[in-house]
Amino acid sequence: MSSYLETALGGNSARAPVWMMRQAGRYLPEYRAVKEKYDFWTMCRTPELAAEITLQPVRRFGMDAAILFSDIMTPLFDMGVQVDFTPAPVIADPVRTAADVRRLRVPEQDEIAPFVSAAIQLIRADSPVPLIGFAAAPLTLATYLVQGSGSKHFMEFRSWLRTDPALASELLGKLTEVTIRYLRAQVAAGAQAVQLFDSWAGLHDIASYREFGAPSAAAVLGALVRPEVPRGYFAVHAAHLMDAVADLPAEIIGVDWRTPLRVARTTCPTRVLQGNLDPAVLLAAPDVVRRETERVLRDGLGGPHIFNLGHGVDLHTPEAGVHAVLEAVRDFDRTAEAAHGAADGAVAPTPPAAPNEREVDAL
Image (cartoon, rainbow, N blue to C red; front, side, top):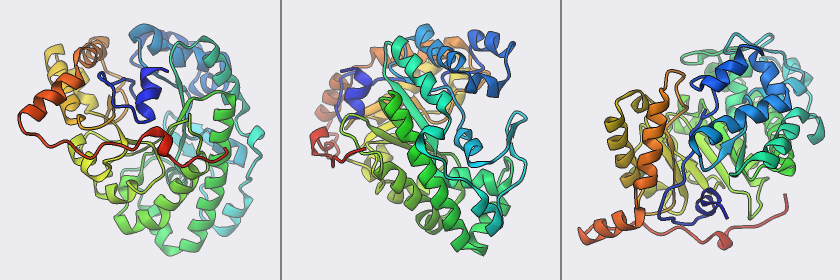
């Protein structure tokens, strides 16, 4: 079993496996070469291009996992939503009324972005490492659908949730079912792990998140239970939501750079933690990158840890920054560091449950 899957399923490995959110993208010269010929949506919709882009960082850096090159808005098209990328996503007709919500289709599993399943099959045939599939959490999809475009505070969406909570629940219900079907299709095509991205969960207070965000995320993750396919959840700027996040049925909890892993470990002691180097660090000199990477690795001791950034790779990231991270992660012996900490009197957190103790159900 690969180091990534072993750790994702609860193994406390001597070396943290490493991959990076947005590891396939604009900072890579080979990606830019493809981008000169094709627009973003064409790259997403063409299985051969999506597969090639997915594997570019694996070939260049030797990442321990690949993550599908796609976009979180992908399943919305088959619901009858027009999305334009300029380059950020823009919804031509925001969804705000009961009629808008009821017009949205809930397509069958094999109707949802079949080009994604085709890309997954191509990647699996050529990838030396496990492939992670992904989707946006229903709350994040609803954020874009109602607001209509990106925003700093998404005021219209937050107001809409409180103005018509029943309609909000209806929308979230449709998005939840589509997301379940979309991720099931990815797993059926060969994705070996799945991650749910909740990019805008941190906008909400804990009460709103418990009412609107957590139930839909839990429903998606709960519908994807398979003993060999670990589930991850990552919410941005969500330190204030960690008590609710800890209740979600996910093996892996992603942590953004604002929350130290040792703090997250106290809230989620039985989970695999993923993260959480500040992406800005990669723009610094290699010695700074190495120092900060080692700090995150020490924070991740005490249980399973998948090294990642605390958000996506920035487009201005130099390759030297990525190489420095990988060298530091591969040189860091977690077993020796943990023993050193124990000798100094550090108290280890509660160990995670063994993988075979997880609830198992049919996908």
